[in-house]
Length: 127
Image (cartoon, rainbow, N blue to C red):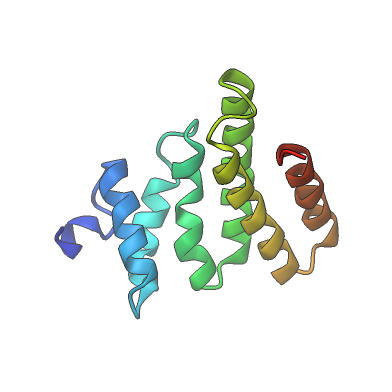
């Protein structure tokens, strides 16, 4: 995959998704901010794709963007769980999104949304 094709110009969600995973391990993850910004505008009902930009934003210290993407991903996850089944394989992804919300809100010094995400995770996980 050519880096030049992925730096915010590609519109394919799979390409952008994989590019973000590659760049989060790269020494310069900030090079993927444009791709993260593009992906954040695509497919609002796909929780995983709403979540992916967070991988770059958090490494670059853009915590407000991480929180916004987390909120969007969690909303999409909840809608899918209501449609499919709350016990589907998506439980792990839903918890992953909530975990990133918790850690980001801690970075931002926001206790209430941290605890709300914690409480939500407790209701999702099987006893």
